[in-house]
Length: 288
Image (cartoon, rainbow, N blue to C red; front, side):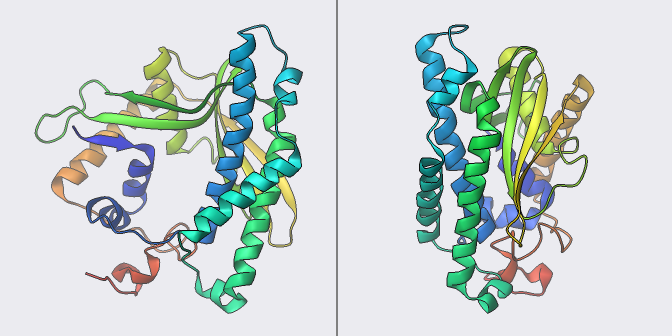
């Protein structure tokens, strides 16, 4: 049965060539430093909310306060240790350095990225986690949108894993954490395809749209300035139907074997794509 995840959809929509190499040719390249930074912070975020969720499950709905959830959080030092350990584990799998990072020195670049991950994890603990009542952590939903099939008529299956689904007095909020070296552009959450897929998953699971969807940006600038930027958004039925049509288009491209490369710039760069240096579409080479 054809199966799509948000990461597969994002990869195909952003760069068909990267999708082809990763998912069809099964090429593997070591992650870049921003990728390892993001993975390390994600692990620290996960551990924080798992502890809150355990309290929620133990005491039962309505029998706990936010303060009790927050008392279960690891302290800042432990959170930072979790991030540091996770970063080292990812780095041991290998690192694809950019030319600028090689010029800076791989050891220094790696250390700077690890320090950023540690700082970001601490910021999340102090500014975001203390406001969250997690009903789900890395919540997985598998569903089949009605009427979506591949060229052979096989139904499509969609798999999503949401970082955190939180309870609020007004309804559920789906939160996703991002790491960055600068603040996101205004409207990033409104335009996020990832959040649209998450809203579709929440509707498939509960029959209701989430009250809000949130991107929690943890920003550490090159000068070391740290801040949290939270963008909130919503989705409606029209937007969910558009997501379904985008999934239909993705499957049609896969069935047809059409994998267009991204335009250079932005995520099509050696900083964000581990295939960049060997990509024939950006003046590199293709190992094939």
